[in-house]
Length: 417
Image (cartoon, rainbow, N blue to C red; front, side, top):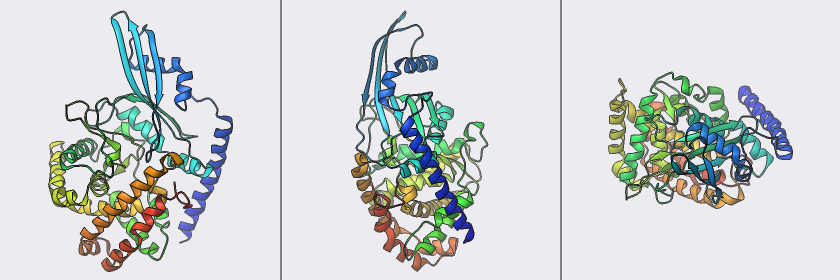
């Protein structure tokens, strides 16, 4: 108990210190090596052109005919500041055009939210993924031309391939079975590529350490806080056990782009801010629980798990049986339930008035799908593998489901991001 109190005080001290950092950044806004937002990108046109030329996206010595930056709307859940950059140049071999997605860190509305945003280092991880892993044929992601984050302030600048022709699927729609296969194949390829591997390109990614798990387990509120905290600690520690791999970490349908019916576009995973190391089954469970209608999950879930397992084997994974996947998937479903119920984790510190409606809608959709999952859980299996009282857990899930998700998307909640 004293250890949890210590970690809680340490966390609050870190937030207080970073609130000062956030205030200084907002007040003085020191010049960074990259632009902070679309307006600065326009001002630093030559910087942008130089980066794209150095990467080979634009020919050297070309004459710029057009440089246009158009800001995207932000009234969606978890939407960072984004803009479309259209560039036309004339070179010795003719005219060239390029369209790029520019992504920047949002500006959280309160200093406390800004401090938590810096502490989470989500954009540091995202920039690291694009800088180190973009171009790997095993990873379904956009091409990256520039990726850098400022660890002190949480600022970010990404210049990425603009996914022309790609199709988005909304969280409320849910992912249909035929598109689920694309996601599952992408998970299998990613996970197999880094399965129990020590790759220098992924050294910046870590599993969540036990002290952090203990601290998160202490954050639950209400009459079931002890039981839910025990559950979170149990299933998250399982997530850290070998075999582990590189995870996307937030593999919901809103972070995916799909090819169009006419064949344009391709499947990619975007928004790699929650990337970490853990059990591959977490990405799979997180996706099937939160982004797939319960009827689709029930009728196609086992087939999709079979497909994922076959993809792992095809990717070179050995010694990992289908039963091991089934057990890891059950643990991962429980981790998803507990993970998303924590306000500190279930909504980013990038939440603003612009995307509040999107956050509320997302919370409503997830609440329903998580309630459906609770009805499908094998509580005898849970008792056998965690030692926790199955009847007490079922009652706790039923009591806290809607309340916890509602709190996670309510900006008046002191833990809300």
